[in-house]
Length: 131
Image 1 (cartoon, rainbow, N blue to C red):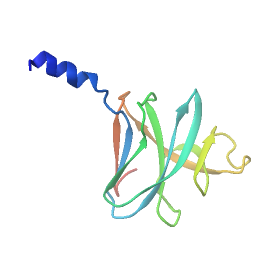
Image 2: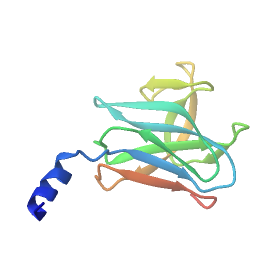
Image 3: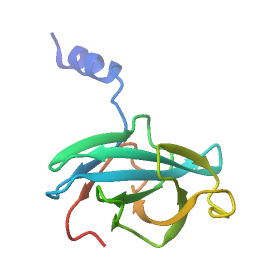
């Protein structure tokens, strides 16, 4: 098999693009994710990620440069926060819009902005020293 044929075979298989979060702490975390979908902000949760485990939270090609994440411990206390306010809920959720969380019956939480540098695949490593 020639190098060109091998290259053609390899490039014909589409690479899976995704946003993966790896929990490098010793604790189980619950993760919520925010992103733009159809030009509207949307938050989704929860993914439970065990210690030293990774979870693909966005399985399709990344189209947004910025992804927002928020994590809590098993008691619901924030373990990863940022400065971007978005909506969450206590149970599994998918919420369109990030304004007026309380008025719409949701909880306001501060998500960390992750700059994916416009890559189609990104892995975020959650450590004990995240901002």
